[in-house]
Image (cartoon, rainbow, N blue to C red; front, side, top):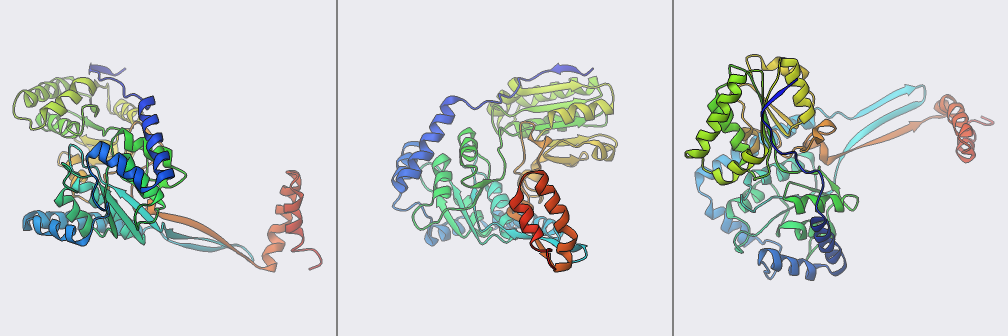
Length: 422
């Protein structure tokens, strides 16, 4: 049985009634009243009520001028990495056309979603990298129209490096709106921006609940809660680096779980001491990361590697690092995670910002049944059939027999009509 050296609080699965009701009120108001409701909520929550919420080219040019060459080069490198990996993924998605019976041809095509809304958070942290992930990827997929939105920062418009990134990644239209009202504007339309078909991107509890309530009106990528990190480590791991990797993700918010799973009790105690040392020393975001570690930090000691796999798969964490002497052994056996980081040099921060894999990932155990955002999320796999008279003779009798057994006699008739008297 695993032994807990430290056990964090369980994540709450429920959305509070206040969050549900607030989101429902905003969405229904925007659907009924349109832009006036968007403006009312934007003014209330963000103190933001410009002449137009749509960002014009002069603002984009101001953003371009504000970004220094060094940062621009790094943004470009990250954009190229994300785009290149998405393109490689796209190339694995083959179309299909095959004759399964004489005269029966079946197949599928991959057709891009027509319009996607990309939401980039900008609260405590204006997430430049989120814009790269959620604008670049749908454009690689072939989406015709990507509408990007990000909240105003300090009532001054979109954070300029974030706006620069949104434009550089290929957004076709840009809104300066945050929170639930932004998602409502994307779903129902605002100004000269038509409604989108799908909304992607992470946000706070209100944004997540808005996506849940809007699902059906639009498609969504996934429902994401507070970000999570887990580390599988053995005696070969550096406890100071493990502690840093746990705190690095925990800085996202005070409710972000950080979990260490190890076969070494000594390592577990060392990591706990290193976390304390970081927090007592010069960890740059200690107020947030420290609160997350205090309430949601966990250290669990397992008897062997098989138990590590079992425990990890039960957690199904969003980010999972493997810092062991044989990470490939775990790679072959682990099955529930959002994204996997193999080896001592692989850290979540690389993927979060620039390495190329997408950082929009499942949380709260959703990795048991879904992966994260990728180029395939923006493609509809549409099947087709082509049947000749010879093919009808192959499939009509079976179709009619099953339809008769279901009492669906009209279905049976449409099948038999194609072979009777022929």
